[in-house]
Amino acid sequence: MKLAIVGVGKLGLALLEGVTAQRVIDPSDIGLLDVNTARIQDIASRTGARIIKRADLAQAGRVLVSLQPRVFPEVTEWLAQENTGYISTMAGVSTATLVRRLGTKRVVRVMPNLAATIGRSQTAITGPREAQDAGDLAFAMTLFGAVGDVYDLPEHLFNAFTGMSASGPAYAAVVAEALADGGVRMGLPRPLANELAAKLLVASGELLQQRAHPGLLKDEVASPGGTTIAGLEALEEAGVRGGLMKAVIAATRRSIELGRDQE
Image 1 (cartoon, helix red, strand yellow):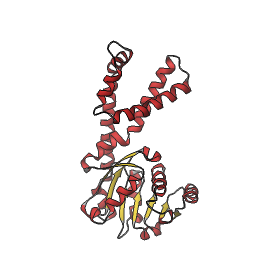
Image 2 (cartoon, rainbow, N blue to C red):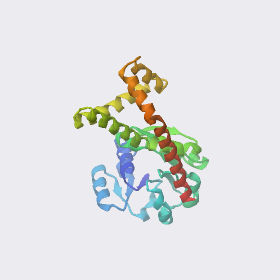
Image 3 (tube, one colour):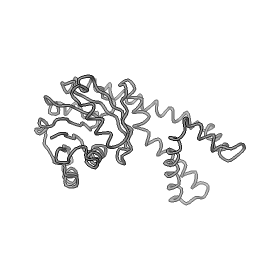
Image 4 (spheres, rainbow, N blue to C red):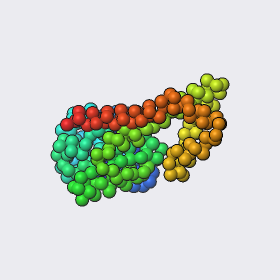
């Protein structure tokens, strides 16, 4: 068994589907372990991966730990195996904590986001020298490269990455919902307003990737004395820019707190 996935939630499932679709790992070489047995039975039947038990982890070359950080201390007794590499998606849990609880330096810390479910995740990745020498880091990069872009990031930036990129889809959803509400307030039908807001964010993201700075796109749209500059003025008065910055700061601080809970 090349990979065991412990915790087959949205992220675990997205990764499973991504690596099998890209033929990174054959489904028969992937084991699934989750408390929701009915769900993983369905997933296993659809994907060809196999359901495993705790004792089977000893047979895994590497283990992906995709659990909530709060449950990590409860599972380490049976999760820790000899001669096994670990890849953790748990927010805030440092490599030092992983090493201490799992009893090995073959640990890789990753932080993807929900866009992994559509193959467009932004994933930060880091690990100690031992993980690099054992090939665990390269293995993790290949895994998450199947569901989006991978960034080799110093660990001291992981909490900021979590606060911005991993939490970012929720911020974008709030922006889209607010734009749609504005459209409804001014008379647009709700289904149309929701569709326009979603497509607007997608198209704007594509446009932003073609420009060196976000301000360039803003300036292109805002003509002198026009409608857009009036709207931008309202955004500044409402403190939208500062609100988004504070959201990233708050989420980053919460990621740090989650890590401290594991120490």
